[in-house]
Structure formats: structure tokens, C-alpha cells
Length: 110
Image (cartoon, rainbow, N blue to C red; front, side, top):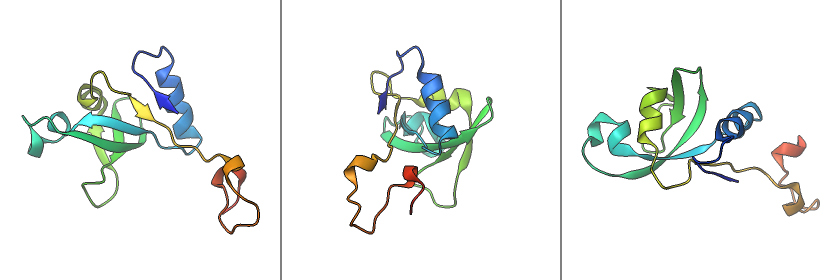
């Protein structure tokens, strides 16, 4: 599912996804998010793993060591304009064949 900034209920989608264990993938400008990239426009994707209303925890594939805490306003400023706000990847049980060993996590299987 793609969530756009102009969708009036985007915050509800993001919050519900986090509660369901579906971490949203956010599209950001790395130059606005990280001091090491300041001044360079660099589209990047990070995974939102949580937050408390003032801060957000993101997992950045370019960094090791788990979630990084960032100010929520800084994260919002770094979102790419004109691009989707987030992508939510959910498991679709209809795509899984019961005879295969892989299972859909949303069905409570591993």
C-alpha cells in the first residue's frame, strides 16, 4: 500500500501499520536527515520502527546497530516532496501455497 502526504488520513495509516507490526518504509532526503550528508540531495529510504510523538526511531539500511532516534520534526522535514510518504508492505496470504514451507506471518504462521 502506498501512502501519500496529501491523504488526509496518512497518520492513521502509519500508526495502524506500526501497531500491526508493519513498519512503514519512508522516503527521505538523506541530506536533510543526516549531518554527514548535509547539503547533498540524496534520496534514501528508511524504515520507521516507532515513535513517541516527539521522536521517531528509524532503521537506516546504510547504518548498522539498530534503530536511530531522530526528532519527529526533522524526519518530517526530510520527507521527499512530491513522492509517496510511505510504503506499507503486508503479507497477502492468497499468494502463499499451502504446500510450500513458507508461511504468511499475518496468518500467525512462520
